[in-house]
Amino acid sequence: MVWFITGCSSGFGKELARQLLKKGEQVVATARNLDSLQDLDSEKQLLKLSLDITDQSAVDSAVKEAISRFERIDVLINNAGYGLGGGLEEASDEQIRAQFETNVFGTIQVTKAILPLMREQKSGYIQVLSSIAGLVSTPGFAYYNGSKFALEGMFEALQQEVRPFGIKVTIVEPGPFRTEFAGSSIKLADPIPAYAETAGKIRNYFDKTNGNQLGDPVKAAEILIGLVERDEPPLRLLLGNWAVDRYTQKLETELKHIKAWEELSRSADFDD
Image (tube, rainbow, N blue to C red; front, side, top):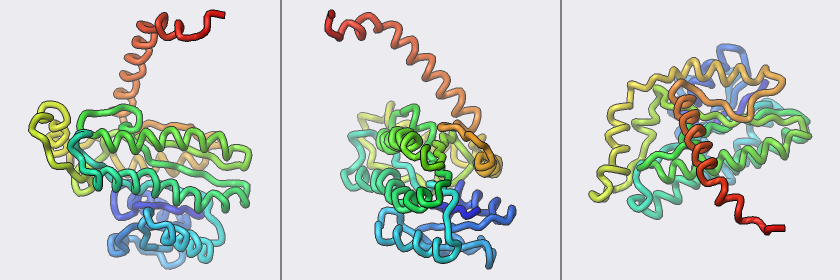
């Protein structure tokens, strides 16, 4: 199989590439900085490409090079992205747009570039790395939440759109994993003192969490690779105890909320 992975400079992307190369798979490993891929080495199995997923011409060129080398793409791992910490009022317009350009529009561009190939093959598997933050919002993470919520909605629709072509889709929602996400992969907005007790607490969370996360990236990579062998992989897959507990708690709360306001909600229809 040929795997095309974005965001391989660190974290899940780097670990996925490592594990796949050990298994003898063919890998297209991409990252903004090609130097970050130096520790990945396999002359026959590996194609390393510099790729900024927000650059459409770069995306098209990377896909063309991948096809030229391996003739097909069987699995797309949309992993590239980063987090913007700060409240809705705190982040600048430039920071907001950059967050969505990478996490949302960049992911769309890569997916749209590869979908025609998979449709022609009548097979393929797309995994998109969302986050538990794509299902549960947190003060101080408004725009990261928004970018991941967007992916959740789009790729849920995509799964239904491409099923007739033999293409499968899984949205992955990790909780905290011991990667660089809470460290070098986080960008912070300038704080507004009024939000110190709400959005401002996210900064302390990153400091305490970084390097102490419960999630094991190696185990996560093995799980994601194993999904390819499933005849019917899940639409959504939570990763880690924290993610499962957090989302379960939200669903239970949401159901109570629906029941509490059900009569008022149902009263909005025409009487006949």
